Amino acid sequence: MSIKIERGKKYSTQEAKAIVDGLYAKVRERWEARVNQRPFMQQLMAGKLPLKTLQIFFRHWGAYTIEINTLTACTYHRNITFFKVNRDLMGPIGEKIADEFIHPKPPGHFLVMMETAKAFGLSEDEVFTSSMPSEFRGKIDFMRGIVYEGTAAEWYAAVTTEEQIGHWSAACYQALTTYYGFDRAKATYFATHVEADLEEHEEGVMGHASFNRMALQRLLETGMAEERPTYGLEYCAMTSVDLHGAMLRSALEEAERA
Image (cartoon, rainbow, N blue to C red; front, side, top):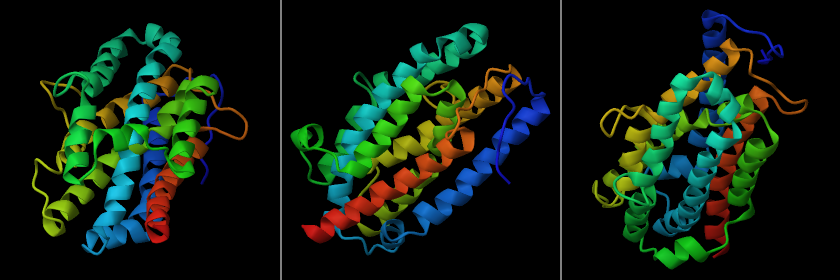
């Protein structure tokens, strides 16, 4: 059943929670089909994905994370009207954004990403100066389009995937430490994102996925959730999942061409 909302309707807490839970359930199901059950993750979890493919993927993924983190910071300004109305959320979003840029120290999670990049044999220049494949750029541009042309509700629908990325990071961490000779220090990017996305961390910073759920539910409760024709909550969420799967697939294809 498709998820549709009524423009301007103030949903009850129970109604809003049911919509959010339903959307997250659809994302979880789609992620299983489009990410977990596809060749990249199936080979990785069996320890059969070539290290060269992992290097290619993480070079592009590292570049992607730098841009997506800065784009997330832009959403505070873009959706400031929502946060002015819901001032109790200003603290949590401030902590969420700051977490990306000050832990473990400035410039933030970039440092964690580079530790794992180095474990893959990648240099900082390779991560910063290599052009991303169209599939990685497509995900960035899709998210950028939602930030600047879409609605706050569509943004928080698109980042429903942050919860799945937490679980995906756990799977990647398990595979790297089981089959590829990584320890926690080398796989620190994935270990950090299990904590950052799914758990309270860094002296009380809310898990990123928990904040995203809260913000989307509040948008529904306050009547501030809006959908555009041809977009909408479900479309943005499903497309976000599909594009993650496309990024993994592109790394496989690039490795095959190399």
